[in-house]
Length: 299
Image 1 (cartoon, rainbow, N blue to C red):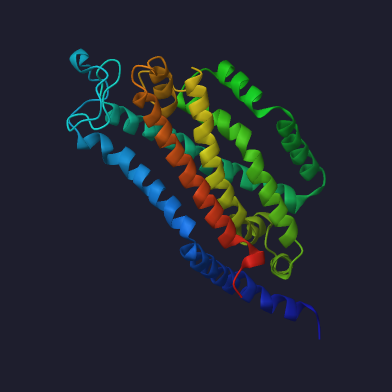
Image 2 (tube, rainbow, N blue to C red; image 1 turned 180 degrees about the vertical axis):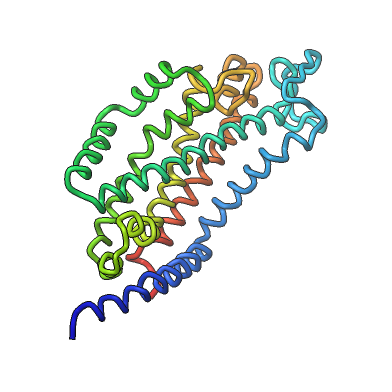
């Protein structure tokens, strides 16, 4: 008997049958996690709100009415009005579109870029692995807030610039997680079987290693989304992010801060939506982390 036969036969069952059972167990565990329902409810509510919310009222984004300045919530203006009489509900919903776009775009981009870099570094190894990991370490050594402020000042304000800067800073987390996952799977039988059958490096990485690294990458994406919203809010509040007249939750806080003693509700409301957004992503991340944890996986 040779060793090639028993090596090739289990590879198909491992590569095809095991992932399906794994993700089924993950889904069952995720559904039983009460925190997941809370996080998903808030996320879905915010997402639906920013999409359809502005169309539920008859006010335009920059519709000024000086006779209705600083009004409290009413049947006409659900969340009141700002210093120019603009409808707060409409502006918060439009601002949510910008902030959530930043969060989701950064999360998807960091998982894509960081995941591919981590898988490439972990599988190829050697000088490439050392070079990529030293780059990751270099980015980590620089204080994040300082680098964020400097890059934002150099690139200038704007939605696309903010997304690019945040992706450039956040992809390192996904790269580390992907590399760690690849190192734990690189020498297992299904990878060796694929190599014996003549699979190319890219096929092994994308077809066999990437699915096994998706768990930690998904968790990383939820946390990166919340971190991106928090960073965008900070930059916009400091005047380095999204600029008026385009609203975002950050610059809405900036505008309202000047009237905090006259209309404190105008400061509280954007902050409340930021809180719900960050909480939803963190709760989803916690639920996914528990569902994907192999140490507590159902047998």
